[in-house]
Length: 321
Image 1 (cartoon, rainbow, N blue to C red):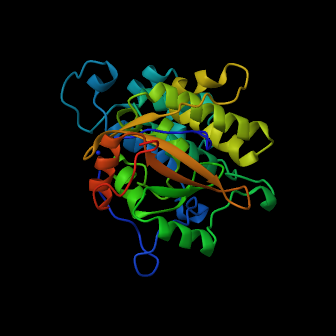
Image 2 (image 1 turned 30 degrees about the vertical axis):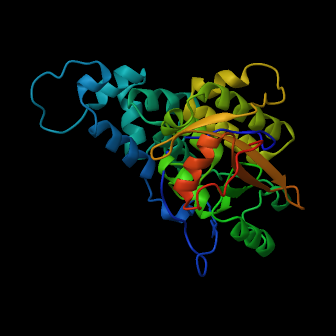
């Protein structure tokens, strides 16, 4: 999403991770080390997904009882449009360089979720001996938060606020932010990321009632970052194109343009219901990170946030209220 827009949100609960006595959470995130992957994890993952499906899951008749679970290689090959021999080589680790097109067809045939597609792409890169990213260290997005910014977040408690870098990684946040976004699924996983949540997590469609509008804005924002010769943004763009498929790729087909900012966005929260929030981004001194504070756009949202964050009633005023 654009870091200069207003957003609106809806019900949740949760706490925050701690660094010291109830301090705002700082998340140091990163990819798994390459050494953590076994010799043929790509093949093992493909086989596990194949064995987890039934013929009826892919539109084939179940037929007689099987001696082994899941789909046969021949059935996956038929649905994916690849040869049985090639699929066998992939599962056995004798072919470690499948093309992006082959990966996409296999992911579709194996009914992979967006998260599973991201994992499949990662395993394929590792199996092929490639590095996830090779840009210079001067281009690396910030992963740490200065102590002064951490202290500022602490002063904002329990208002929903977070620090994000240019790629949408959530680096630090208040308890209020976790109570707002934690139940939606944003903070799950090793490295919470706003772009990945919107496009590669099916829960985002329930969280954002106007998902298409939010997706348009996020895609335009990331595309502009990639156009600025940002190798990290380009890599994330490629990852989401593979993970989200048409819902993301179609938004890249037209000419680049600035995001269309909505004055207010809606979010549906499991505890607080539908919220209408304005997002107030504050650019920090290094211009790489943004401190984003979520403000209620109406009195009903203000009251709901008070209950959600534990603030005394009426303490969080609606913008313009």
